[in-house]
Amino acid sequence: MLDQQLYLDAVDLLKQLIATPSFSKEENKTANIIEAFLQGRNIKTNRVINNVWAVNKYFNPAKPSILLNSHHDTVKPNPQYTKDPFKPVIEEGRLYGLGSNDAGGCLVSLIAAFLHFYQQKDLAYNLVLATTAEEEISGKNGIEALLKDQEFQQVTESFTKPTLGGGGAAIVGEPTLMNLAVAEKGLLVLDCIAYGKAGHAAREEGENAIYKAVKDIEWFKTYRFQKVSEWLGPVKMSVTSIQTENKAHNIIPSQCSFIVDVRVTDEYSHEEVLATIQQNVVSEVTPRSMRLRSTRIDADHPVVRAGIAIGKTCFGSPTSSDKALMPFPALKCGPGDSARSHTADEFIYLTEIERGIEDYIKMIKKVL
Image 1 (cartoon, rainbow, N blue to C red):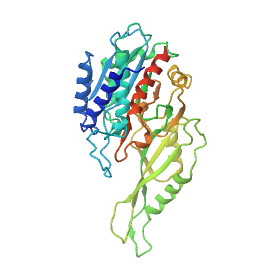
Image 2 (cartoon, rainbow, N blue to C red; image 1 turned 180 degrees about the vertical axis):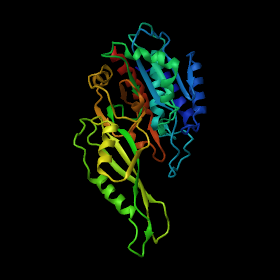
Image 3 (cartoon, rainbow, N blue to C red; image 1 turned 120 degrees about the horizontal axis):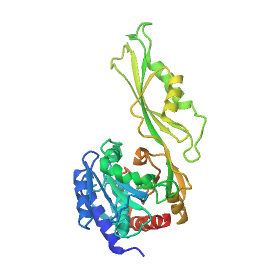
Image 4 (cartoon, one colour; image 1 turned 90 degrees about the horizontal axis):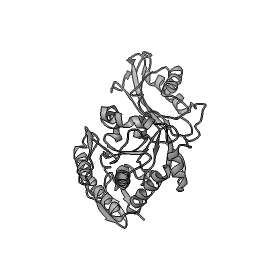
């Protein structure tokens, strides 16, 4: 039976977080709230910028660890909101508010699970709680900054201990209906420029960069990478923006730029996908970042087996998370529904939070 006070405290914390704007890069106040919540329960906290973390009371560096991670930043509210996005309101079992579903429900459920185990002695593993910033923009001052922190690195050394079937792992809280995202696609954003030669539109002059771009765009539309991932399916490429440098109607454009969103699977590295693209298009192709890699945790990993043992199903996620930046096995799992993320009048069911806390506790116990 779940400790009802644990659940009520989690809901109250989520209400506080909803009421406090925390757009990416502006999470200082929600970091303060999380610090105060933990410190009020006599838990020593650590902070790196707006990332707040803690370890269980009887942390032992000789043991492996499970990282419990979720984020407290949000996107800006959808303009179609009919409710105040910063006013936590409960209606018919739903808690409304910006960040309630993505990923506030996951965050407070993981915090509650951490509290459940915090004072227990003789655990076979450590628990490390990390509430992080800038996830929504994949910013460098979020989990990436935390992973570079010297003190946090000393803690995560225990992730490589040879217990737990080859080391520790992370549970990353994102809304998955508490099912197990064992893999997720990586993200590769490409800035492409097709070059031509300017000329007057009324005469047979110039070389139209748009026409060159169109041929490349057609390639992006029709090309299929040969290898298909077991969990993630095929690599997906989408052209999402196009423009030229001139606005005049009578000038043949010498440049045409466009953006391509590429969702990379675990069957390919970013470098392999980029090389294939550059071999097949005439446009200049420049990746914005190579950081957000596709990730996969072995379905036989004890953390995954623990989820399966309590009735959860495995799937591949098309969206990326902080899981992409972790250099150790990570499972994405949390209460709420990804389909509600970033929507107007975002909400999470209170029963999802209650069940989320229960299931996180059950999973962690099963890892033993």
